Image 1 (cartoon, rainbow, N blue to C red):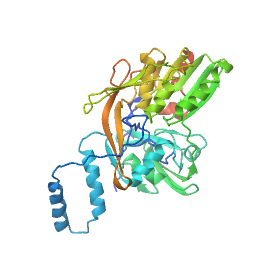
Image 2 (cartoon, rainbow, N blue to C red):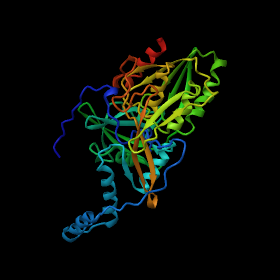
Image 3 (tube, rainbow, N blue to C red):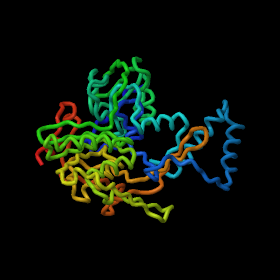
Image 4 (tube, rainbow, N blue to C red):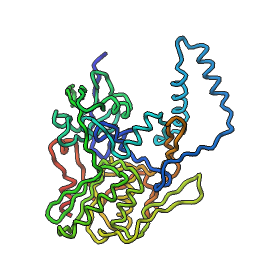
Length: 395
C-alpha cells in the first residue's frame, strides 16, 4: 500500500463532528443521546404491520441469488436489507441494530463498558481522533494523546471504519492484549496495551474553595439522583458557585436531564417535544420541591461534544436565567428517538420528534452558542491545561 498522506487540519474541539459512537472506555459507551419518545417509560414493543408490496426487493434477491458467482448468506442479506431500509430515510440518528448490537447499545446506556483501554474518540474531518484519555487507564499510561488519529488495531487498518466497528475491535476481556497504532502529525506510533476494567461513573464532584466542580459524562438513569446527593452537601461546605461540566457529554436519558434540572428549576418547563407524526406536542416539566440550587451561581462548560440531553440541560438553565454557558458551540442534536424492540432481539432507533428549549429554540438547528466563548485545543488537553475551566472559576 502506498504511504498515505495524512491531512492534519487545525481543528479545535468545538468543530469536531461526533461519530456513531464516542466511547469513554472503548467498551461500548455510546456517546450520543439515545432517548425514548416518552422519556419516563421503557422501549416500545409494538409494531403495526404494513400492507406494502415488497415484491421488488424479492426480485433483487432472486436475481442476485441466480447470478452471483458465490454463496449467499441469506441471514446476512436480510440483516443488511433491514439496515438499508433504516438508512434510506437519510437521517443519521435512525438506525437498525442487530440483536448483538442492540445488547451492546443497551449496556452502553448504563455505562456498562466492560474492559477497554480508557480513551474517548470521535470523528474529526475524515478520521477518528482521540478526544481524551482517562486517568490511570492503559491508553494514558502508554502515552496516547488527544488529537492522535486511530490508524490500526492489531495491525489492521481501521481509520476508514465506522467508530462502532473500531470500538468492537478495541474492547475485550480484561487482561487481554491489543495493539493500537495512531498517526501523530506525520509519524506512526504503536502501543501494546493490556485491556482493563473501566470504572465509568456518570458524574463526580470536586471542590476548590467555595466552588463545586461537577463532571457529568453521560445522563444515566441515576445521574440526577447522584448529583442531588452532591448538592445536599454544598450548604455544609459553604459552596457559593457550581461549575457543571457537560463537555463531550453526548447525552443519555432525557428523564435524567429533567431530574438534574429539578435541582435548579421548581416545577418549570424543561423542554418541549414537537412531532409531525403526532399533533399532540409534549412538554416536560421539572419536579417541585427539589430545587436546592435555584439560587446558586452556575456556569456550564460546553463544547462540540455537548449533545442532546446535555443541550437540553444547558438550554433550559440558560433560558430560565439560572446559568451562564462558557466554552464552544454545542453539537446540535435536538431529536427525540423511539427505541422499538423487533424480533429476535433486534432494535430500531428512529427519530420521531424534535426538542425545543423552554423559549422555543430548536436545539438541532445549529447547537447552542456559549455566552462566553473560550477555546480548548488538543495541545491544551495534552499539557493538562484547561482555559475553559480557569475562565469559569473567574466568573
